[in-house]
Amino acid sequence: MPESEKTIAALISINIAVFACWKIPALQKYMTRYFCHNPTSNRQLTLLTSCFSHRNVIHLTVNMVGLWSFGPILHDLLGREQFVALYLSLGIGGNVVSHQLQLVARHIAARPIIPSMGASGALYGLLTGTAYLYPDAVAFVALLPWMPFKITYAVPALLTLDTAGILMRWRMFDHFAHLGGAALGVAYMQFGPNYMWPYMINTVRDLKKSVGNGKGGNSNGGSDKTSGALMEMPERIRAKLLGKKTVAVPEKQ
Image (cartoon, rainbow, N blue to C red; front, side, top):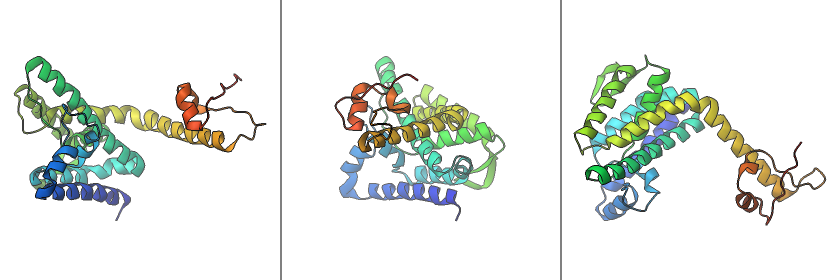
């Protein structure tokens, strides 16, 4: 099995496991509390956990068939680590957009809050990202598996449907999360692979090196120079990471 299929199979398995938990009566209260994001609650963890949560078998099937259909395209392009990071970021990002816009809509237009759950935000981001890079790519719809379609045709139709859902106040789906995930997917394909991801990797690498030097000593005559992204952090945070009370400011070269 290719690496892309292994990764996506793992994501699908998590979604199926969470779906199975919804079917256990004794877990209903727990699942509602920790796997369904409500903007009026004070729980941030559900921004992530709700991305794996489906209560309806049709909702689950449509999302997982979509993930299996066009997920490998971006996985093969980005690699496992970046793809998984993107998938989670799109899901969380879509929920954050929905969280904020639902609160605004409730304040301005007395719009009722719709709790967020499902992988649709992440899927919309993968779909628009794929369409942005590969407009001729072909995918399948769960309800019409015999009818492949070009992604570039599906995206405008879905975005129009979600926009109509917001204007008409449909409550079946979280349309804000869909549109938020879609926008983030295009934005990442434009700036992520060449700018955001390399910067993040370099930042983490510099941070690990700096923390290692701070804890294990420095070979340059015992000096306490710190380089890279760590020096861009506030003094208090750098000191905490290095396990010291104070951190020397690096000398200018």
